[in-house]
Amino acid sequence: MRIGIMGGTFDPIHYGHLNSAEEIAEIFKIDQILFIPAFIQPHKRGKKTADAYHRLMMTLLATLSNPRFTVSTIEIEKGGYSYTIDTIKKLSKTLRRNTNFYFIAGIDAFKEISTWKDADRLLRSCDFIVSTRPGYRIDALFKILSETVSKKYRDLRFKIEKKNSSIKSSRLSVIGSRTFIHTVETTPFDISSTEVRNRVRKGMTIKYLLPELVEDYIYKNELYV
Image: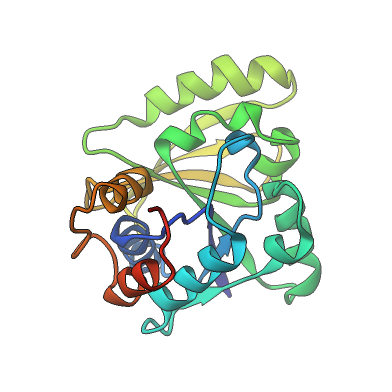
């Protein structure tokens, strides 16, 4: 079974998240996309976010109509800072053995992976699918990882592989492991959670930026005002 993992604050979740997850599931033949709202993301330390309960409810409402989408409370139940390596480790213990994990991340976030907790173990623990912008080259990502991750972890090296004919996506192999870093272009949505929050504060419409159920929830609970 193939499970895609999409983590994030989801403050709030919007069509950019949902469309990327749906397209990646289709391209990589992923059986289930697991959305995991963070309790507190380490790189957002000190920044104010909506209560975890509200972010969880919005994620549930946004994914309700898609049978391939599921929401996990694993990081919210744990509390504290949410580290991807801890989540992957726990999921590996609770799900069946023949499950393959694919952690989904945007290119901007993934370029900072050298700063993530135990990045060396993380990159060896599961495949990554990196959503890129049109025209982004795999050798650019290779250079970034070589200059950051490989510099920090001397035994961690990467290799550019030929495109997988079945997926038609460029990828890097993590030398010495069975994991890969895939890159894929998804339909660009010029939407951000920050923009949604700002529009609510300014009394501007957020219609068609996120599911109607999420929009209603934001207004009903007076979030971001």
